Image (cartoon, rainbow, N blue to C red; front, side, top):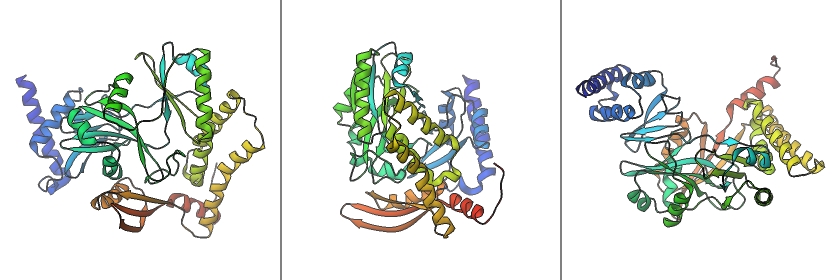
Length: 414
């Protein structure tokens, strides 16, 4: 034990010396944690078997990046370190594990039969962006998949549910959910039933300092107790033929409503969670992304075409002129418009309008974009009612530049 404490103290001193060489006077200005906080970080990472040497190496190689929000320092994992995957966060003594990736099935009936021997729950998969909500020190923050604190999401949390009550009574829990709607700063696609502004849809609760999720029954109880809005819950099913048919009927309704799909969650922890998406989701993904086809990996489109074909065949939908027309329009029309704009020297961009509660979070949102290397320009900013309304454009310069070079005669090998 004495040797361990000595090692931590020595490690902290070495860490400070290294950081001062790298950042000069920033330590004195308070940009990075002071000695006691550095020691706390080393104690924290040691709990998940990340040694002082491995931690220092991760910082030097920029696998972990120091960041802060409203004076709260935290560390973002941009690459895997030990058992902590990309997207994980450490803030003081708190560890927030990354949100795990979910496997996809392409054939619903066979996927269910292969995945589940025990009953499972079915929930809607909402088309939005993923956040993990946790209380850090005395502030409730919303973290993105990429481990950033999202200023927009954090600002709007108070509009979704009573965050103070939940996190005062459950400080060691993390609420995971999707933010979706026409007033979000990231996505142009969202469920048809979200019409006026962003909404929050919780789908998971996880435990701080572990990679463990709260069991579905307890999660539902907490959601209902604290009146937290959730994704649509379809209930518990078995892998029987009759239950598979019920799920297919639910999917038909979701597809007709323009929804993304479903997530199937096991009751047996030995089995895995899987997701399945609708035909309409495939078309929307292609339509919203093909305007940037020049900088999007080809497999993005290949995967969605294959998913669409599987859906058509399994659900016995004919490949008629309507499907072919919709697929062609989803792929061709947006990129046609991008090329037309670029050759006329008109910047390719996407317009957004968002609402925030606090004026200071407007600046933080655009600082966040700059940090993420997203090129945006503000078109307008005004206070109307209780919200600050902000219009901005996300400029797609790489696609614009590539198109112009090719139009001007650049040759390339493909």
